[in-house]
Length: 418
Image (cartoon, rainbow, N blue to C red; front, side, top):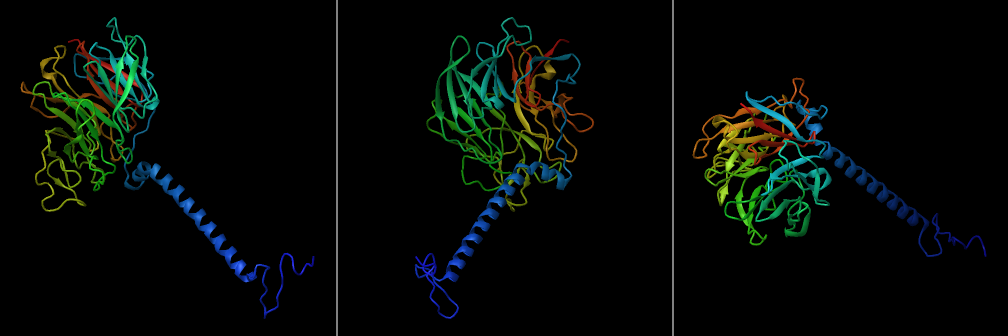
């Protein structure tokens, strides 16, 4: 076999030679160059995607860097909250992993959505000592559970992508899991799902927006949806709620009230955080209007706040109100029977705010009757660090107020002794 014919057959034609397939060597080189550039472009694209992912994951830090905002750091730990005279706090249970919303079962046991482990936890206190006797894993392997409620002997759990229903055995173990509302939207900024069984026996689900401010493609975002108790017949109940994390029934008038997290990037004090009464078909304004009267600079207009329901309560911007609880038990004095709201705390404010529990006075008809006032403080320190982040609130059968802290992994019990 001649070296002139294998692997290349040379045919002199000017300065060109061809391989044995008849393709010019220069053409082969050009093809190789194109492939090489294609590989380089693919590598660059992959690098850009990685960089974009890293930037997105650090968007909070970058925002703080460029705007001078302060995201509190600090070591998580137990504190002794500063409370009004006559009130006392103690640790009901510690060592949890990102406990979010809490609720008492009909039998009086505190249940916790333990987000980081994908579990529902029970903390029984059968001897009424003010401290949980043990930790019972009720259900595990859940998809980012953050809320729960009880109805007619069943436990309802809000997971990121669905709502599940369980029955409980005598040992507080969940059995017979049923996914009654599947395929909830999971992407974007706000991925927690709050469930509440309303006074009408229907299932209400809060679904936050996918963004800070935008026009959503999925109309379930930035809304509260309502379903029959078996998960059927779902429909829009209230819209324009950017992130209504907390939901609770006002025991005086049987209305559903919600906390709502206002948008970012409008300054340290705008727009205020809010509490609303839910109305069927209600429009609460987002993204075009905030807190009932503030027209959005991007999505508003001359009539941006037209037809928008006004909030019942306005609170300091960027406080991040999450759980809320109505107190009408007899242990607390009359002037402290009303609404309690847990502030998770700011991440995008020059001077940090929140990281506390506030009280809103209500009258005998369950209507707001006074300004918001601090109730439990101390998680935010003078140097701007924070040792905890309040999340969930619930009133126990003993008349005490229970609070979860998802940074320190604590459950606080707040009581009144006079």
